[in-house]
Length: 249
Length: 316
Image 1 (cartoon, helix red, strand yellow):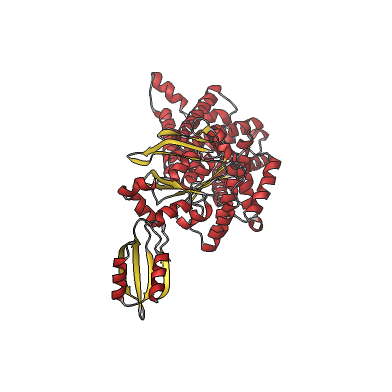
Image 2 (image 1 turned 90 degrees about the vertical axis):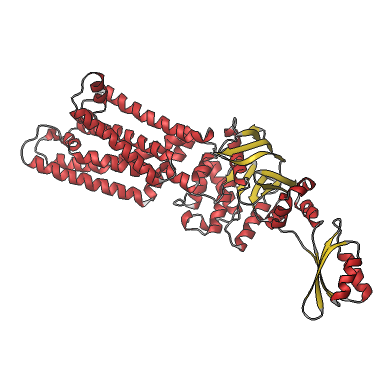
């Protein structure tokens, strides 16, 4: 555990000591700001039948930010260490592969959540100026952040996996972008395709958008939570296997 | 301390090291010498548990590097080739992080970091960002990292590569100071460096260990065939005649030097040292000698000699 914290602290400091971290946060804040512009325009006009937080997920901007930003967060994570050779110094200390993967993923997740904090400010401003007191309540906010956490966790675990596969940050980024976008495309497919039987059931679980919509309405479906957590674990497990693979390659 | 037996590592289609065996006793400083691609780094990577061997076994401090890798890693300090560091971190912060990774407690790691920084002369840069340090300082940070957990075995892959002569000297001094307390395995392709630092040298070539001995013994073995250069003021004709008559000289070459001096390159028979004989001869005839030297062997000569198949057994 001691080693895990030391590793995670270093990973986090790598995000915050580099310009990349701040550029990512600034870019995301800028884009969410744009989303808010859209939101407030809509709110200013007609009364709105759904919570503000739900509207946030329905503007397609969020679904653009997610697969673009997560690869930038994770591309560095293993690829850079392999490229610069620090992977060798890291793996020859008495740390386990599991600790390394867990620490790197957790640090990415913490950074990702920090990245969404400015959004909270935006939401509070909306709440302050909205005429209805019930425009945003704690449940909505909690649901929103839980949704961000789960969806983000999945995309970040995909990114970790991609980064573990290669020495090149570029390749890692492109790979996780492709994987991430395909997850989103499958989710759109499930929205539109008129499939029946088991195919429809499988696709139902991939319908990220409406699942997150449930969250922001304050409805937490355990099936969805389990779905995300298990996919996340699958990709982390694959990452671990890739990291271990140097022992049997 | 190190027991390597029949170690082989094959990469896809290429054998990096084939069936090597050697052992290193506690407290020794051993140099792994060889040209690029000889398998030095591969050997070190296996010993430091970074990757497994294809076959054979290696033990460090009695633990198997594959099956008890964590125990081994606890006991080593490893500095890979090119000394990779986290360039965005500060020196002290980096060393503290590494100490924590190696399982040292909070208080202990603070104490050790202070000690190794003093040992490696890093106090004045303790708060500088590693990426902005000169190569010499970075190398010292790498060394400090290898020392921070008081390892029983220190493995240094090309610790002086790319440094200027002054920095090389300080790094060498540092390594020399480790003798006795730690076992050290260093790889290098510079012979004088190995001579200066190591109590024993292993010469690797093409994935095999060709020779293993103290620097002095290796030199002695080599010296047998080394030429003697003599510059003597005498007519070339009488010199040639003189060398022909001398039974100890196997081959000679006389060429004109400045003035009346002739430069003679003499190859001895049976590894004799020709210098006293040449001197005695010149004295007898009243010739002036202004140079009399025996060639010291360079690493190149040793490689050439060792890798010549017919002389291989002789050296081993």
